[in-house]
Structure formats: structure tokens, C-alpha cells
Length: 486
Image: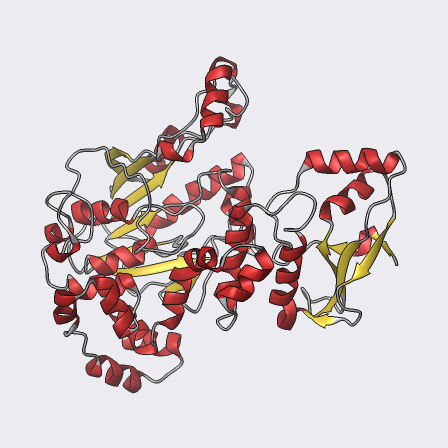
């Protein structure tokens, strides 16, 4: 059947690709001009989609659709996945799986990165779907799916009581916990009083922390927090690299200088998330700039690395993000709207703000997918992006106390792609100097500048060679600015 192209909607949740291939679109467009006939695209009529009575979503054939659009076509040949309109909310996972399967069989094959991202999305919203069902649709082995979503499944299997205990350790009041968990305050008090995790210490003597976490149906970060309860902060870092888990030190050796670098993220702390940072980096900030019992604010919590690490170090934590989910009850909803900036509701001013926002345009596609209907910070133009920081730093200063610290993690953004270093132009650049100026203007005093470089392992050999051939100077430097309320 022929469908008007203008009526077809691209839903970023249903469609599994993070990027379109302009080269493929151009190739298809030239073929259409030459008279080539392509297979019909696949669409689905849905109801209850973004307040529309009915919408036509594309399931398969985005490149063909874009090619037809580029040559001026008004209609395109299409077939329906189901001939009856489907309820969007009820069927969106099934539609995503169908779209993923189509995109693994022809045309530009779905990348492993897109498969992993979408598999995790499905696991987040559908507790009952099996790893094998996802594997069948994505065309990968079940063990691969297991490795991609194991942390999500572990959190979903965590008991209600363990979530309550987690919130209690992070400093939530019983009333706040009751509201978040949908129960009464007396019931929360009863559960907290009845929780007995002391035996975890005995269990890890004969097994390991991962075994104990599975036994008690708690997440691994909470298991480590329970195990290290009451220890000195220094005990949470290994004295020597060869120290094993039995020594009771979950983290790498403590760095004693102002260069902190790690080759990878610790999978025990935080979810797999765009822009995820090593828990060790957060741990060092907590070690040097907070004390036990201090309140830490994470205004853009993402995958939850900061609250997980606060658990380990016996710090209280208030975490906020645009994206919230059942498996992470400690992360509350808050959207930093540049046109209506508000400070999140907190009963007590934080002792530390750990602020790890998007690094301007870096990973913008991933943040767009996570943001849903909202505009992510990474998508703002440069002037609006910097305006956001000006307002955030000022709000943070107004809503904190005299001894509050702010740990701000970010990196230089330079327009260096496909250019020799000598040919770069600075008008699109944002450097740590720009952020430092905004911090000082808001009243913050910078006390420490710490280098936290990204791992060079993220750079492919072909990319390195291209940089060398073009005399391009890439960016691996990441900087932590630690400030004090002035």
C-alpha cells in the first residue's frame, strides 16, 4: 500500500539505530533516480502515542524512507506489521524487538553498540522477557545478552527490604522511604528494625561478596557497603595491588597525587550508562573532601555511580536525574530546565556536590535517547549550554552553606575532528578555563585541579593513525575542579 511520507513518525524508542548513515541514504537516492525498486518499508499504526489518537510508526526501512524523501517523493510503498492498530504502551517492546530483528537481517546491519543499548532498554521496562527472547531477535548469543543486562537483572531481583535498607543507609527519612516505596512509615520502621544482614560477614569468610549478594538478594554495591560497615575509609582501598577480595578492600590502591587515572569502570558500582565514570574517581573525592555521615548531592545521577559509592563510604546521598527507574529508587526525578531553573528539594544543605554533567556534544546521541521528550543538556547550542552552567553554579552557591565543596568533572570540547591542530578555530570550543571563570563569577573558590584522563584504550588503531596522518590533536584529558563555597 502507498503511505504519505509526511504521516510516518520515527519513534526513537521503537527504532533501534542511534545514527542514520548518510552514505547509505545517498546511495539509495541515486538508485531511486535510476529507476531501482526497493522492498516496501514496514510500519505500524498505533494508538495512545504522545497524545495522538493514531500514529504511523516506522518499524523497518528508515534509510529507504529518507532516500525517497530526499528525491522529493510524497508517498512510499509500505506493509503493516499488524493490520490492526496496536496500543503503543502495551506493544512497544514487541515493536522494538521486531524492528531490531529486521535491522539485523538486511541493509546496514545493527551495530553491537545499538543492540546493547536497546537490549538494556528492554530489560529495564520488561522484567519478564527472557534473555533468550532478546537474543533471538537481536541475532546474538544468549551469554552476550546476559553480560549486557546482568546488572539490571540483579537490581530487579533485589528484594523490597534491601531497597528500603539502601535508602536508609543513604540518609533518607522513613517518611521519604514510605512515599517512595508506597507504604506507611510504621511499616518502614518495622522492616528496618527487622533487617538482619550481620551474617554477611560470616558468609564472605567462606565465599565471596558476590555470592553473599546473590544469597541475600541484594545488589553488589549494597553487599560491599554492608561488608565494609564501620571500617576506616582507608580500609576501602587496597594497600597493594596483589591484595585479594579476602583482604576486604574493594577498591584499587589510593592515589596520593593529583593525577587519577583508571583503565575502565568498576562494574560493581553504577549501571552501564552513557558517560559512566569509574567509582574509584568518586571514591577518591569522598576520601579527600568528605567525612563519614556527610551529605552528598548528585544533581545528574545517570547510572548511579555516586550513590553506590556513597553507600560504600557511609555517606548520605541525594541523587537526581531526568531519567528515573524502579530499580534505582534512590534517584529522584528532576529536570534542569534552563528556562525555569529550580533547585531540587533537600531537607539539608549538602556538604559536597559531585557534578558530572555531559561533556557538551560528546555522546549527544546517547543522551538524547535517555532524555525522552526533554532536551538534554548536550544538545543545547554553545551560548545556551554555558548559560546553563552560569545559572547552575549560582543556584548551587545560593543553596549551600559556607563549608560546602563542589567537585566539578568535565573535559575540554574542541572542534578538532578531521582537522590538523594548526587549522582548528576556537569559536566552537569550550575549555575548562571557561568553566573555571563561571565558577569564580558565581562565588566559588577553586582549591584543587586534578587530572582524571580518559583511557587511551577507547581510541581505535585506525583513529590514532588518522590523527597522526592529519596532525589532529585529540582529547583524552578530563579535569576535576574542586571548589569551596567562598
